[in-house]
Amino acid sequence: ADAYSWPGEHHIHIEGALTPELLFQLASSNGVTLPTDDHAFQSVSTLYERYQHFESLDDFLHYYYIGMSVLVTESDFEALAWDYFQHAARDGVVHAEVFFDPQAHLSRGISYETILSGFKTAQTRALEEFGITSELICCFLRHLPVPDSLAAFNIPELQASLTNGSVAGIGLDSSESGFPPLLFKDLYQQAAAFGIRRTAHAGEEGPASYIRDALDTLGVSRVDHGVALVQDRELMARVAEQGTLLTVCPWSNVFLKGVRSVSELPIREFLDAGVQFSINSDDPAYFGNHYILDNFCAVQEAFNLSVDEWRRVCEAGIRGSWCSEQRKAEML
Ligand code: ES4
Ligand code: ZN
Image 1 (cartoon, rainbow, N blue to C red):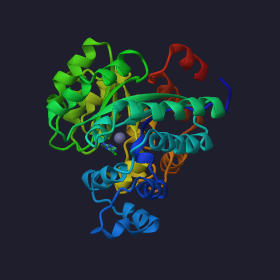
Image 2 (cartoon, helix red, strand yellow; image 1 turned 90 degrees about the vertical axis):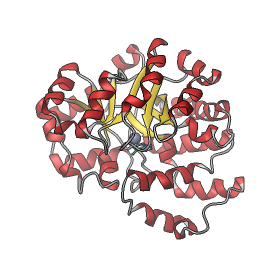
Image 3 (cartoon, rainbow, N blue to C red; image 1 turned 60 degrees about the vertical axis):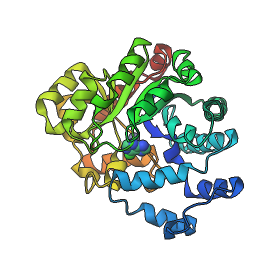
Image 4 (cartoon, helix red, strand yellow; image 1 turned 90 degrees about the horizontal axis):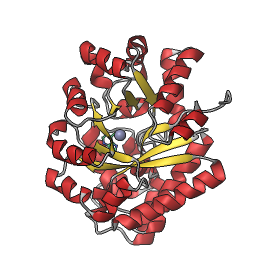
């Protein structure tokens, strides 16, 4: 690997890369009506302004789900992913693992094939033009009734994408508090029976016990966010020992009021305890347009990592990637 190789990104919701510019453009071309009673939707700049003042994860999610309602056609999904890959290329990303939320589109009458085809076209173009390899991760929404996720998982095209390798694995996202991992035990057991890779958001707004439950009950091989791990030193030692990757999202935690500043994140504790973690952007278009490089810079400003510590962060991300062993070897 050369000195300029860059780690992957493992925690980016593609719907969270929908910029207000593209949002208004697609709303107009698809004739989608945005809320008329919310001043934020008056213009690109009022929407950006509103994104500066999220009160919580749920306050953000309200805008996130309205935003993605403008995505209708295959070319919309392609344009969204292409917009993201252009930012990723500018930031030097060489490998990206991208979450998407099919339930939020299926419920609006969009077919799974429409969603996936749009993404695949953008992924192929990103590989050809930028040399960026990428994987998709199908997320299930924890705020919806559990049977909804099981029904989605059992859609033949969706299940086929997970077993034929066109989607790398499953995740669990959306509102965390009040929706413990235990609720999704059946879904994760079914996925495990197919040998499907599993991750879950845990310990973002929820307690450290949700991280333990994601590991023990859902059998996840990595944990998204996981910053609450610092509240349970015994579990932290175990996660370090197992080498489980946490996908930490610094600017996201600041924008959603988990911490007041990046300097409050347990980055130093994780490094000292030998916890494996990567640095990610989560929903860059909603969180100050902070793509991955801004997240790296914020961590560097707050914690001043050594070159060796950055190497550990990057190597942890590569080892925890859901790509081929050959691709990992190229990146290491
Ligand atoms: C998310 Cl920041 C965050 N947390 C949980 N679920 C999400 N979906 C999109 N962004
Ligand atoms: Zn996330």
